Length: 532
Image (tube, rainbow, N blue to C red; front, side, top):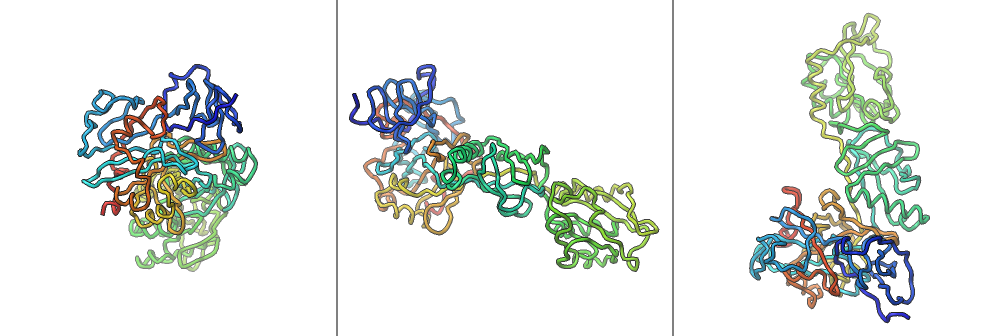
């Protein structure tokens, strides 16, 4: 026997304690929905879920014949300090909600519905799960809230280090699978691109799963170790120092070798006769450098291996590596050729340092013009320490990059191009879990967001494979009507808080309160020029 229709994904949540014990994951199965099962249409997999089991994504379950969401909907509050998940069935004057949230039609309240746990109405010929009206600064606003299913998405990872991680375009592997590549090095940082549609869906199933797993872990602020072909092993975690080949990085360089010479030249004047700042990019030599010449420093007769760029600036003094200044050297003297006897002199004082000050050595030329190690004077050490003081902590930054296209826009309006244009014209503000998203220029809605500005556990997965990410579109109510929005599904904040998504089918629901970190994110409904 089959049922004539399926149960829609409700976008809401119930506690795991309310579900029967021993939940098991169901394998995707297409075709008619048999009696006792419910079909979940939260993604293209269309799982048929039996009583007491969960779908392939672990996000939905069959509880007494009703499809329920296992994660709470996340609400942001400017006043509520957070708590365990609370039932959405309570009225606003109950103790389960903050006193500041008593239902008042004209009162402006610091509450924002995010897409985290909101579910989706995929395929979005149906309106988004939450289309919420509220006031901000006296203006009637509306926020369209959904979870986007992104297969066109990736993570851009910035690693603050001069250490050599791998050649540009080298494959990045997770659990042995190729899931990304090394991209361009930037000033003091190495960059990785992880995931992307070709890794998620263009390779083997195992490759797609591992790419998805890595993106899920890193997006949710977790730690994961990757291996770069012919390069380093790196432990990545957003907001934490990278661990390169088992060594935790401490400092991001103050600048290239040339920049360091320029910054500290005056402080070395009178203390050193020559300074070499070793750097894989540009090694700086003080007396040849414009800074030294402006200070009328005497030429030292030093000779540097490598390719001279401009006076006092040298490229390719050594191969990239994990040693001094991102090179492979452990002995700084190895980058020196013989000194010019017409300019050098016995007793010449030479400082060699890295761009972070973590490696530094002091030498004095002997009668044969050979540098001999010596104890570094305290005044020189003080300047080296200042290099370290000017270095920022070495951190890993993880940015989610996704294309919000396809039918996702139909959940907002019946004329999707209107939404795209309104976003580009700054009529619509785009956030992800309440965090500000940068929308790239050009066609489409290609957005980028710092995962650390999003609440914890903002990302989910579906086994297609694809990332599930929250997305919110906020605008004036009048603008929403003008772009062909689903006005018949606009509900008040009170109604949304108490009943959950419009298609909940009476399922039990929960919410979780989050307080945005002070001074980090602007309040989503207050962002200009949307209210200008």
